[in-house]
Image 1: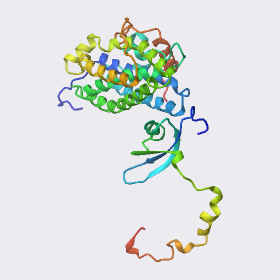
Image 2 (image 1 turned 180 degrees about the vertical axis):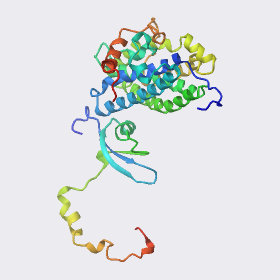
Image 3 (image 1 turned 90 degrees about the horizontal axis):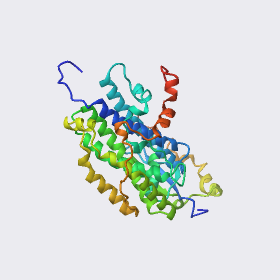
Image 4 (image 1 turned 45 degrees about the horizontal axis):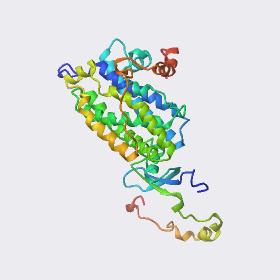
Length: 263
Length: 97
């Protein structure tokens, strides 16, 4: 960029890290299905979507690293921050476990649906961000999340409207996960700051649309919308469940054992 | 299907690699219905930008020739080399045909 160019608005690194951590943590979590999928085709589908998410995370970390300076890189942000520094929604770090199974596909699908329905709206809105790089990342990510939404919605309907067991497991997954969607809407200082500068979208303006996407899918799937009760820890403020640290340990161990390695 | 209650039906997948080219058979997969087969074909067979269009067809809808019919189906053509257009001199102006 030359010196004559007008200074471009940029989103705060905290806001970028929130978006990046969301993508990375869910990408890592869903990658646990690699080699364990319920059928070969779904195994590949989940791995594809994880790679979409890791790709989004990389672009966001690169942008954040450039703003941070001091030698920060996408790798230092992904591999050398600890759980307390991560700003992802707590929902995304939860294991796939349910009372019925250690890895329950109903949990995976329900979470992917709740999150991709949100990101469908977030990425769409962020295309108008005053941060041009974030707007470009949003445009690319929107195409990917449209498919993630389609995939998870399709399975939500099949499972909800399937056998008695698939219905019960999906309803149970929804009951289990719904409280964690509360922090989608809770105001945070980072979010407010980004919104006031025209860099991000106020999540409150997306809520009615998200409710509509959820209610329409649940109606078709024959599922009941549970109340989002309880007070799970808000991960976007750095307060996580006990499940994030082990996930990060898995993901970060190699980079930390060989800090300057090239691959 | 040997066990229709448990086994998902088989689908044949055809992918068009770019506009103007024909769809080519590239493999098969199991899926519950046509829409799901299409999505799975997208995930399994177009991950490396192989396609711009996908067809899926129930494998059971394909009528195939029998290997045992090879003699009457294909062998009579073996000695009819005059059906290959290789006995003509093509004028240079025609270029590549």
